[in-house]
Amino acid sequence: MDPLESIPDALWKRHANPKSGWSRVLITPLLLYAVYRRSGKLTALALAFTIVNPVLFSPPEDDDAWMTRVVLAERWWVDERGKPVLSRSYPAVLNLINLPVFAYALLAAYRKRPARAALAGLASILLKLGFVAELVSRYDAAKAGSAASAARTDAE
Image 1 (tube, rainbow, N blue to C red):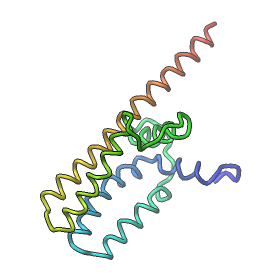
Image 2: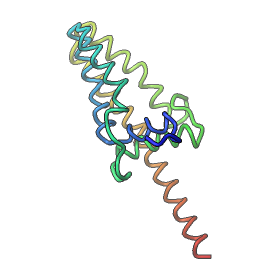
Image 3: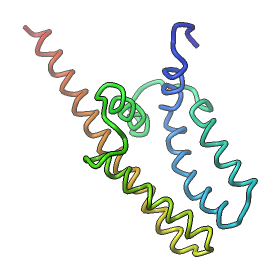
Image 4: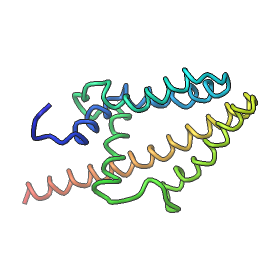
């Protein structure tokens, strides 16, 4: 790691590896299963994986992978645009709606209602993917706009 690079920068770069993002998607079903089984060990494992996940993978070589751009877009949304990830404005409202949906999924798993837990868990994942898909769309458009602007400036 470059000594001049901040720890958050290093974490974001490593988290941008598509393996990091896609493996985090699997946390929801794993956590719901752990709650359903009443397994403290499996719950702790899922939570520990969530915490260490951003440092498990090396930074990606490029930003071609969609999941890499998901992470870059989230950082761009928060750091450069100064936008919240939880608010009543679109697309952050998808994350806001996701909170009670995920809580319901956990409750359904705890109450041993597997179909409800699975459906709510799937809805939670889809809400998160919808949020990040919109961010990637906006990020890609902004990046393309910047490239087009730079090309116009270079041509002048």
